Image 1 (cartoon, rainbow, N blue to C red):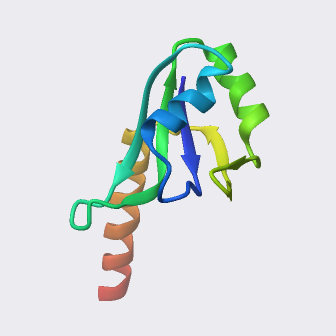
Image 2 (image 1 turned 180 degrees about the horizontal axis):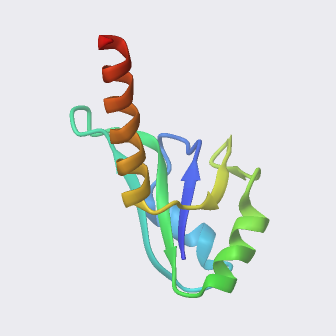
Amino acid sequence: MNIFVARLNYATKEEDLRATFEAFGEVSSAKIIMDRETNRSKGFGFVEMADDEAGEIAIQNLNDTELDGRTIVVKKAEPRENNRSNNRYNRENSWNNDRY
């Protein structure tokens, strides 16, 4: 299960994120998204858990809890393809509507 984690403290490390989720089951990967220009955390990341049931339990137990002084948001990640196609459609639609 792929899990989205938002509102992370900019100082939170991937190891800390992994350790937080390992309390609920096997973590396949933990990734904090970094800004390319500043190399600073963007304040969100993704955790991949091997077992969907463990992922659901982690979401239920960690959403709206504190990690490194910040209240985090934890939810099931949406597939990336859906986000991209929806965003492209919205941009194209907005552009076309502005022209006519």
